[in-house]
Structure formats: structure tokens, C-alpha cells
Amino acid sequence: PEGEPLVRIEKVTKKFGDVYAVDEVSLDIHKGEFFSLLGSSGCGKTTLLRMLAGFETPSSGRIFIDGVDITEVPPYKRPINMMFQSYALFPHMSVEDNIAFGLKQEGMAKAERKERVAEMMSLVQISPFAKRKPHQLSGGQRQRVALARALAKQPKILLLDEPLGALDKKLREKTQFELVNIQERLGMTFIIVTHDQEEAMTMSSRIALMRDGRIEQIDPPRRLYEFPSTQFAASFIGSINLLSGYVVEQTSHYVTIQSEEAGGLLRVHHSQPLVAGMPVTVAIRPEKCRLIPELTGEPNEVSGVIKEIAYLGDVSIYHVDLPSGKRVQFTQSNVQALAEQPLTWEQTVHLSWKEDSC
Ligand code: ADP
Ligand code: MG
Image (cartoon, rainbow, N blue to C red; front, side, top):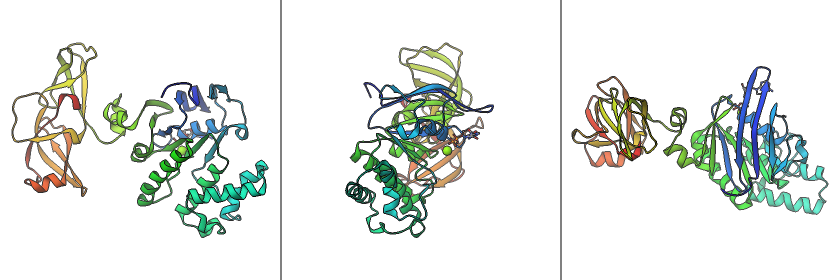
């Protein structure tokens, strides 16, 4: 994205006692983005979101919206709303009263309020439950009410803290698409917190992967998956094989690596200069490995014995022990496996992958 960012977070740090919950985080978010903060529990996602909302003040650093410094602006004066992880619905109020609450406080006229509430209920498909109280709703319906309430004030930016965390897997997957659909229809900017990499991959235009209060990498999902910039990022998103070795030689496009773990030479598409003898790690996704009938002596080939098979319906994951003792994984579509000879436990297999897929 180009142009002035909608949100600019500049070297923001939040300390709780001796703990750096958020540690010098800088990032830009643009209008209309579906932006995810992804990371394991305790890495600082919620704290960063709460600073954006204004519920926490940074220990240092600044936050800008549309170029205006809002670091000291109270929550209710920010063009931001937040949907909490717990939903925080008022238990004694009906669905429509819950959604109307913020609008009423804002002083919106009754007729307009009614119209807006009806619009929001229709948007999240809860109109038939308008008169119900939260305890008369399922988890998924409560989640929708919370979303409708957060959207009702039509904030520029909606913050969502683990919005789908309380839903079961099927409903979560369905709701992921609905959230994206709603966000696109409203043209609003969503910033979402999740620890679930698949969820972040499915929904986001960009993902900020966090680790120990810091940003590890910010990229669109595909780029994060295909070009992880660190071993942590490579292992956090999906599974990956890591083979270590040292640089033997480099041409303008390729690096050749001697790897004891792989039991031979590796060749990788890489144009940044490396020094001969330098230790490196090559990362290969399991689905990039292809079965070959026998070794040909080219780089990027390994042989090993299948030690575990995980059948997942559409694909199977095979765990293979190489002679060096290193265990690697490869996946194969089960459609393909049915057409060929099925692979079995303790079978010796030969694998290869391309220079540009690692
Ligand atoms: P996440 O949402 O990624 O799970 P949090 O932002 O909730 O992480 O927490 C980040 C770190 O800051 C954790 O170590 C947590 O214990 C600590 N922390 C969060 N809020 C507070 C607080 N109010 N007081 C003290 N420590 C806190
Ligand atoms: Mg959290």
C-alpha cells in the first residue's frame, strides 16, 4: 500500500514492571486493510491493541491516526472501537438494546438509532433474535451481537481481540469468511488479534507476526509463508524442514551448500552475497518435496525411510528419517497416492525439490 498510513505506530513500548509487554514496535496500517497481529500467548498482542484503543498508555513511543498524534487522546475521542475477547455484552439488555447502547450514549436520535440497529442486525444476520437476552443466545450469536455493537458507531477502525476464539472449528471457519465479507462491504479497517495462524492466513491482507513483544515480520500471508525472513517465522507458519550446512560456492543466482544433515549438496536460488564456508540453514516446505524413483546425483536430493504417516483425508504427511538422523516431512495429496502405489511405513523413499522452492 502507498500513501499516508491510516495508523502509524512509532517505536511503541509498554512496560509492566520489569516486563516489556510491547518492545519498540513500529508499523503502518493503511485504510481498508484487514490487518492481523499474530503470535503465541503472552507476546503482547492484546497490549498493543489496547494502546491503539487508548485503554493503555505507551511507556514510550507515539501513535498516529491520519497523521495526528493520538497517543494522549482518551478512548472515546478516537475514531476506533474495540470488540473484546469476552464480548462484554450487557446481560440484562436485549440484543437490540445492547447494539443501541453506544448510539444512545452518543445522543443519536431515536428514529435514526432504530434504523442503524436494524441495519446492523441484518448485516450480522441476527434480526430474528432482536428481543432476546444474551443468555438466550448461542456462542456464535453472542459473537455476532458483539460485532454489531462494535460496528454500530461506524468507527474508522475496528479492533477485534481473538473474536472467534470461543467458537468451535466449523463455525470459526464460516465466520472468518463472513468477517472479511463485512469488512469489505463496509470498507472499514479491521485490526485483529489472533494466535491462530490459519485464521490470520485466511482473513488478512497483511500479518504482523509478533514474538516476545517485538515484530518478527510484517507481510501479506502468501509472502510470509513463501519467504519467511527468520527461522522463527518459517516454523510458526505451517511446518518446514530445516537443513543446515555451509556455503561451498555461489554464482550470480545460486548458492551451493554442503549439508551433512542432508547427506549431500543443496542448491538454493539466492542472489545476496554469501561467503564461502559460512554456515547457513535451508528451509523447505513439506509440500515442495517431490518423490523421485531414484537418486540422480543432482543437488537437493535425499533418501530416507518413512517412520510416521499422518492421514489427514485430503493429504497425508510422511515423516522420513535420513541416514544422518535428521527427520524431514513431506506431504502428498491422497488423490495422487490412490492413483499410484500407496506409501507404507518403513519404505525407503527418494525426495527432491527445486532450487527456487526453498
Ligand atoms: P497476548 O495478548 O499476546 O497473549 P498480552 O498483551 O496480554 O499478550 O501480554 C503480554 C505480556 O504482558 C504478558 O507477559 C503479560 O503477562 C503482560 N501483561 C499484560 N497486561 C498486564 C498488566 N495489566 N499488568 C502486568 N502485566 C501485564
Ligand atoms: Mg491476548
